[in-house]
Length: 332
Image (cartoon, rainbow, N blue to C red):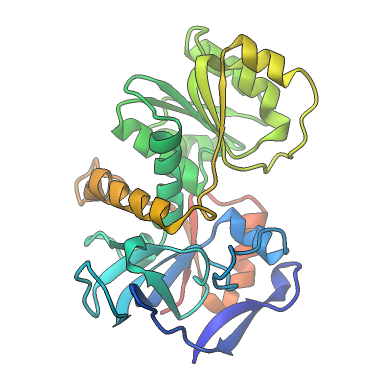
């Protein structure tokens, strides 16, 4: 048996209950991880409210990323994992618990100089940002990339990855503190969407050329300023709709006049093979840069909670106060 956070009925953070449930057993090709820490994602809040169910056949326990140690090896493994190896993993669900069983293709070694709490902040946010920039937008050296929610988990990862790939990151955020943090990570410019027009800011920064790539988790309410500040032949990558799903106005006409590309992407619903290829590419191209050098990549952690205070962690994210990832320690 093990402790896990369960949701008996969709609703608010108070519906997150710590219960004793059966410990999963590793199937063929899987590794059982003893979880040291997990981290929050916006999708967790939607799942708790009953709006984002797990893919068919996956755990209904919330949690899309973990770090911990290898506990038990299933049959038919090919990658040489050993008990007690420090690992981090991308999940379809099951992270808010003491153990989770994961296909070995979704495991990565935890960077040796990071704690497991820090490593838990990497998988979902960094693989999402990597997927959006490399596989979807196909960002090129020298391009300008506008990342909305620049102080979020994906945003802070995207800023650093854009710099790593030789492109130029600019961001939006809702407070001076969030903008300052993004700029410390490498953002060339930042715009407070509550106080100024980010479209005008991008226009001025680029000398009227616009952003070659926009990473957008906001959606509906931002469509017009997004298109206005998109470069000709630019790629607008939509991966969330926190600002609504409805669109009114001449979206298609304005996008057509820019020859703009509207691309959309989700990660959780992708096939195991797609995720395995993504993890492999990330492990080769990015993971080595999480080093102990001053210029290395680093996960940005806003705060840490204990599993028994998971409701407090959800309230903190819903208040939109976090800068970087909210980590939940399972082992103290």
